[in-house]
Length: 142
Image (cartoon, rainbow, N blue to C red; front, side):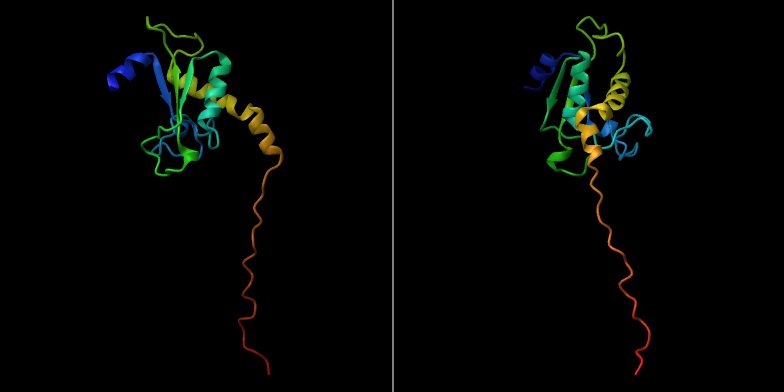
C-alpha cells in the first residue's frame, strides 16, 4: 500500500514541515533555515498559500506530524508536499532548483500575507501582574 502512495507522488515531490521554517525552533528541534530568515510559527496552510501563488503544485497533509515535534496539538499538525521536479528530473520552476530555495522563499513571503499583516495590527499584549505584593514583611508597630 505504501509503494502505491509513493508512486502516485513520484520522486519530484518534497516535504516541508512548518518546523523547518519556525524561528521558535532550534536546529536540533528541526529548523532548517537561518533564524534571521525564519518565521514565527508558520502553518501548513500559509506554506501552501505562498507556494501555490508562485505556481508550484502543492498538497497539504493535515494529519501528518513532524517526528521531532513533541507537542501533539492540532496547531502543530500538518506537512506540505511540493512538486519540485518533473518526471524527467528538471525543476518545475527554474527559480526553485532546490528544496532550500523553496523553504527560503516561503519564509520570506509568509510575513507579507494578509492574514499576518492584519494580526500584527491588533497585537494582543498580555497584562503582566507586578510581583510587589509582599510589602509588609517588617515588624508590626504597637
